[in-house]
Length: 387
Image 1 (cartoon, rainbow, N blue to C red):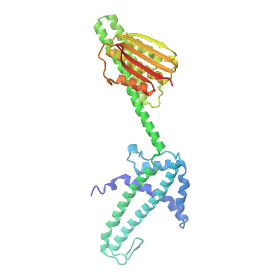
Image 2 (cartoon, rainbow, N blue to C red):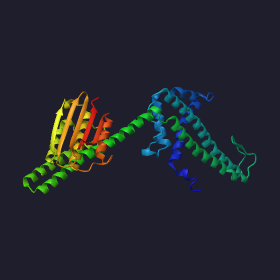
Image 3 (tube, helix red, strand yellow):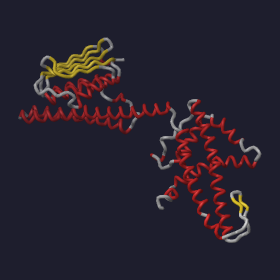
């Protein structure tokens, strides 16, 4: 029984009822003006629904009154954007007509059924015969009290049922159009790509800094040379400071979605990476050819991260070995190549998020990445188109 009456305790039941009553205010005013033409309000809804902004107003009302308990107080299945196409305008007109029709039914039910209950009670307690549009009582009798629950049950079912029906129809007529669904899907995709990019940024920058710090600390402890230890601590300090700057940039992206990407490091900052690798014990031989400074921002930033991850892998898996770095801008293509001697077990296919991240970065820019053994060396070779 409690479950059956639960809708009566929900505020949504009454806000939906209010939503159904609202159109009848205009109809009531018109009937006072000219009761002989009750169809005029429905006719006036046609040009009204063709106004683009009306769809926004109807969507806001539907979200607030039909399903106020939705996510963040909103029903995502109901759009609040203007009518962008004629299809949206036609759907808005149909919605206004349906809403007015359901409002008329709701008004009749919520007015005449309570009146019927009152008339049944009056007839049961011996009052003079009552003439009601829904019933005619010729002789009062106590047995009429037994009929009182029937109109109450009908009223309850009508209020709850009409509320559910108008909510369903609102989602059909005011729901997002195909263009809006596509835009929402694109926005969701952008959010997922942004999260993936942030994860890569953290992995590359913080992972590189930690790798350099671990290698430097281990080398300093093994060397037992105060001068070398000072240089190692200085390198750890510089790398840690750079990692903190990178972390601030990544956190800035999380705090401020519209923040420009121009603050992230590019290939113009590659000297910092190379020097960091050298101070960690690697013998880096770098060669840069072509106008690197003219590389577009997105390509240059991703190229920096690819180079950073490649050097991090060298330090992590091979240690202080000779490393050959080649950066070339030729014929509209950015080429990156990092090679080092194989001194450890070759990673298995797909292992490690670093190599996978390099391939994913290249693929997103329409480029190619090859990683793996090549003539006794470990090779990372990436080609990125500049357009």
